[in-house]
Length: 216
Picture 1 (cartoon, rainbow, N blue to C red):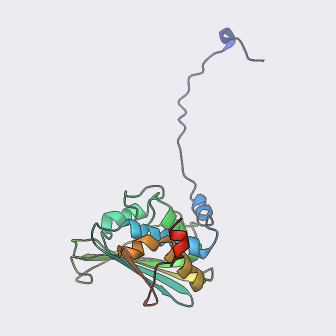
Picture 2 (picture 1 turned 120 degrees about the vertical axis):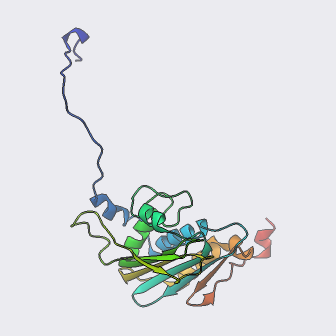
Picture 3 (picture 1 turned 180 degrees about the vertical axis):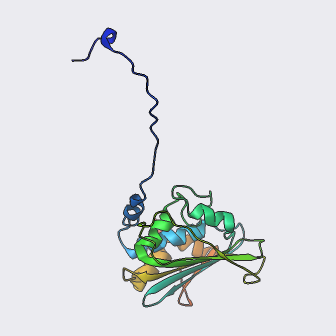
């Protein structure tokens, strides 16, 4: 039974409750994908989201025995500020790049493999920034910190670029299923020449839909 109000007594206290983030949740987020193709689509979607108006984005995917590399050129790219945003879980710029909601792209990278290398440059900036990680899933030593390597003249000033190389893959990537998913999911953008996607230098064609289905 609830006590009558006259029996209640408020106790003064200096205690303050603060919200915190358990870094262990990062590992949980990296398990939220059903398969490698879904995780790769997350990364490609972020590249597509980085498109510039009236400029064709070129997305090259390279698949190896134990690595995948995704290179996006033609968009806005990333600079030092965007790299800093990338390292903040739950925070991201409006365009997204490596995760519109501040976690998708980063989690997808951790789902696919445990090591990565980011090489980025921003449209209009002459500098290229590189950061690398060898144990992305582990947070035993606490929050991650990086000192970027900075180069000038590596990327043309008029080109935004984001290169994501994920190594030490923990899951096998089915190239056929990846091709089918990309040609279907991005069919309209491919048909309209708003994006170009290649896998190991082989251009991807939009999924062909039977005429009978188009007429429905």
